[in-house]
Length: 467
Ligand code: PFF
Image (cartoon, rainbow, N blue to C red; front, side, top):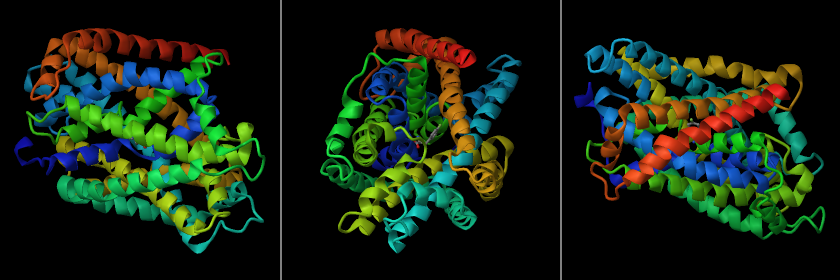
């Protein structure tokens, strides 16, 4: 199996593909709405703490497990344990644990995609509206335009299917010709548009209220607010770190499984985190939140999942060249979502191809139909109920993006740091330009990362039960 596996074509291709995997709708759609609805400055403190204490250590583990597990196929932990048990290098009953872990990761990935792919569809639909001037008429608020969009079956389902078909074909082409080629094209464009939009965002005053300039909006997330700490916003921040870095489900492991055995993992994983955080807090945070603030004020920014689709068209419809800027923004969102969705799609295909022996193109179509089934309720909810708060989508996003990813991440880090133990550190440092010192591994991987993540899960569950 492993001898015929593909590898990344080049170092730059690998880094761009990993950045494309991590940088997604999480950065430009999810981060702004999570930060804004969890108190802005109050969210950013647990966010950075979770990034350092949990996010970076888990990212290192996933690269490490992935490269190590490449010889077992797609490189994810559960199935790897399953195969090791069958091979006799792990106790027999480990096979069951491995298979269950693999099935959970498969299910969680499907669930993320039940809504993720719809949002990619929205970006295409909104790109179409930008080009055709569909939201330029100021008689309707951008909130109403959004409601009309999600309740319009033709728009919702046409662009969703287009997005899914594009993904299926990209994944069928494999690692170098599919994933790497798209990342090399899309990621530089994404950064360029992101920088342009962030600059534009900072230079607008508020047409609604002179007190709501975009710079004040920037202050809203960058002004640390220690007084409004809550377990709910802390777990939301940790969940966001998992979501944005693509950690928890094994998606990073899967990309790392296409590394060669002595390719570096330490510097490359830190590079992925840095590229992602730049896109998230600098570009995503600056492009969306200040604009939302300028048009909706401090009480309006926390309005939920539609933020990226509601706030920005306000600017485009009132500025010169708005249709062009609007198209750029939705193209950016599309590229971000597409390169991450390829990663998740490839993961599911690799699991089917390498564990169940299904041919790649067939597996791609099975996943396509799986996505349709899990995605239908998400698309149908606003249409059938004539509501627009996207309660079902938000609920799934909350469970998956917050709880399940953190739970899976805890299992992963405990398995690596305690069950693999010192070998995990040796593996991580193999072929590395930089070495992870032993004290870091002992303090973070073995202690702080699991303890802090479990504490967060515990107290937020208590809060949930009490509420
Ligand atoms: N990291 C990607 C994003 O920020 O949009 C998508 C993603 C991949 C989310 C994998 C969650 C995940 F487990």
